[in-house]
Length: 82
Image 1 (spheres, rainbow, N blue to C red):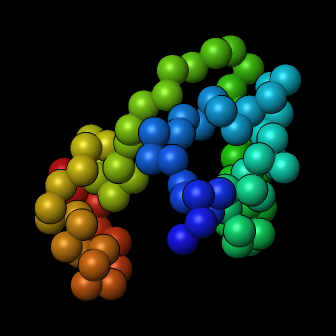
Image 2 (image 1 turned 90 degrees about the horizontal axis):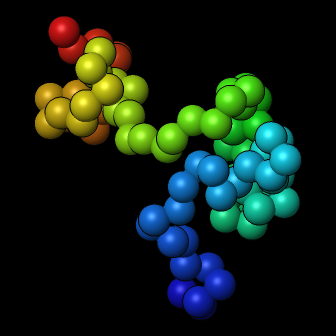
Image 3 (image 1 turned 120 degrees about the vertical axis):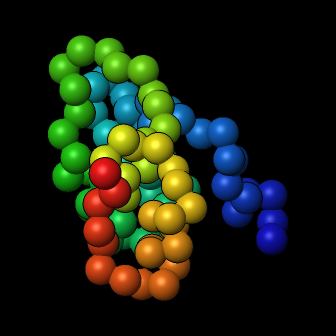
C-alpha cells in the first residue's frame, strides 16, 4: 500500500466539515465508495459545535460490547441490547 492510500486511524468527523458543510472532496479522498460518501453527506450536521465522540450504534447505551459485535459478525438480524 502506498503512503497516500493509508488511512489515518485518528481522523475526526470535524476534519471532514468545512464552513458547516461536509467536505465532499476530502470524504471522497478517504472513502472511495461513493455510495458510502452519499450516505455520509445525507447526515445533517448540527448547527452548533459538538465534540466528536465514539458511539456504537448496535447497543442502546452506545458502548461497544462483544455481544453486539458477535451478532454483527454472524450476520444475525440486529437486536438492540438493553
